[in-house]
Every structure is written in C-alpha cells, then in structure tokens.
Image (cartoon, rainbow, N blue to C red; front, side, top):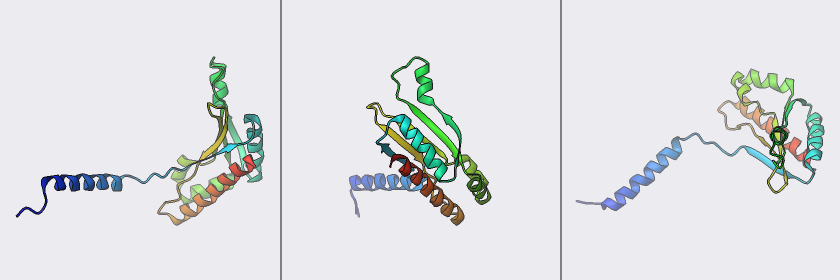
Length: 155
C-alpha cells in the first residue's frame, strides 16, 4: 500500500533536513546596534567622549583606522575610528561571573563614515541568552549602558 508519492516524500525529507540543520545551529542574533549621527565625524567623536565619561567609563584606546588608510594614500577613504573604554568595577564583576567573558569585552564603539558621508555610530551588544542568570543580568546592564552612550552621543 503506497501512502505517499515519491515527490511528497522527497519534499518532506528536504523540509526535515532544513529544520534539522537550522535547529542545530547556534542561534546568533544580530547584536550589532547602530545609529546615524546628525553631527560631523569629529563632533560625534567629541560627543562620544562625553557620553562615555558620563557612564563612568574611561577611554583606554582609540584606533583611527580610516585616517591610517588615508595616510597610506587612499585620501578619499571614509573615516572610521574605534574607541575602546572600560569600567574596572564592571570588568571585575564580569570576570567573577565568567572569566571567559574577557574574550567578549563589550566596550568598543565605532564611529564611521558611510560612502555617502553619513556618520554611523555602532557597537556589538553582549549576548543576553546565556544559561547563566548572573551573566544574563550583567549583559542586559552593559547593553543598556552601551545604548545609553550611543543615544547620548547623537542627541
């Protein structure tokens, strides 16, 4: 007794295979958080400095990637700068929750020009889906801080 035609069976197998592979993949949500700035590139960087300090972070380093590329001869290359900052109290808390989180240090914000000249400010948010409840709470707190910094930068 033939219940399904071979075409239907093939279709079901394709669907099941797709569901199997997508269900087994790590769920990687898009954690990139970005906004357009109404200010010039330079003014956005100045506003970012103020916003970072208002959230009790300290700037550690700034990489002027776009300017370095311009200095090598590509004079029209869009500007792009990455600002690294830290709050030692949060860093300690993070490492006490999970020492491996040091590899995902969330305190980086980039300011870049698009090809059309628009200034974009962005960061990668921490993963809030950990099985560790303390890590989830910490990630939500840091993500709130990062969003607040970006919001204050472009106000």
